[in-house]
Length: 564
Ligand SMILES: [Zn+2]
Image (cartoon, rainbow, N blue to C red; front, top):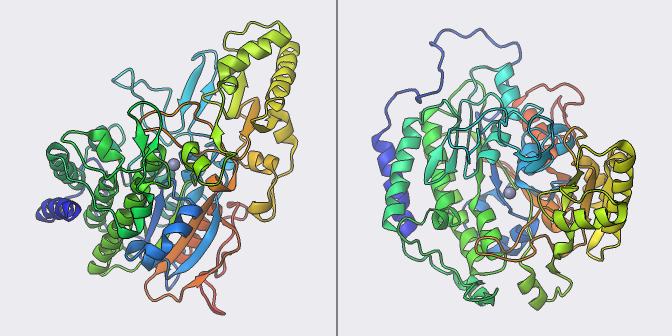
């Protein structure tokens, strides 16, 4: 099977290269006796925390496929299973979602309100700022940006562990820079993500031997191409084309890889396999799990998201993707077992997802449809200008037909108030709109509390609201309105809404020997950091987390110890 060949190829190179060299570009202090830390890890602390995010792995997908999983997912499903984890906030995008997982706080406190936001500062003018860029620096390529975790306002679990136990290692790898950086954090020993045709790191860091070797191995696969992946029997009912205009259809893909097709590689199970191969190699290179204090390895697997965006969630493509991911995760855990490591795993997702409306309409959800162009910023600018007499140019700014929207910053206060009222009225009059909240309304709302499934829409908006960056208005589309006006190759379906198909994700915890249980009541991804902090005995100041420790002991014992 092609993937086996690829794995053995990749691992073969890596094993041959296992030499006791520090990773290039990572500052390693000269070894010397470390003073005993004031706080010791919990007596039964795992030596390695493996935090896995499956990008766009909704609770719906987990529920739909869990009976078919035989390998990695099946192992995790024998642990503590929380099938209704919540990315509780409204802006269910990759960067905010990843920012909650290991910080234990909502985007309102991580400062990561969206993947991008509009910055109208005097110096820079209207510009979409990417959540994982340092916009104060210019990249060598003017079309590029300088990757950075600087917008993340809080420490991650890895940051906290390293601050207390400097010998611990904090390593992150992903198909996406924002995922690796938001899970890894500010003090990160090794961080890699896919860019172009291989894995890269932060500016100024040299690729380590593991990354160089992985890039070589996957580069050979890319150059040669690869055959179709097999369609499991239980996927065969999904093998039906959904036409999207012209020669363009989705639903029957098999992931044959044409030589040199970088985007085809990225949006396929081979991307996740490569990420897990590199993760395994980074375990060896950084000697993870062999410290006296716990290490953290963050792995965010991006292909499920690219497959969801490119083909939707209910075709052969997602079916093959999830089976291959199950197998790849299984091999990854076996590799950790073979190293004799005592590790604890959490697996979750940054957000959920929703199928393409053309298939949803056929499959008993006729209310699903694509958003009209009347909610795009130029159309809204024209409408608000017509009502107020203000200049329409850049009057309303946004990066799409939902979420945060900004008014042009040079408006006089009275004009801004008129424009705001006109914009809100225009939005609420639109039959596709569920809610439109102004910044002042969200700021005045109380902090959300109680079970996330019962949160109101403004509660959800509040958890995404950070006043210095958030828009003047937040637009929420009705359930089932997909914010892609017209589908195109690679982008037919999406997430990002405040509805549960985008908020609800599985949360699975596993450690060798644990007694599993299932807790169907809603929990939150902000519960993950306090749960893991307690598991390793990391003291954290009161109020540091929005979430709570989840007791992973199925019986009368507790893993929440003295740090619930
Ligand atoms: Zn994502």
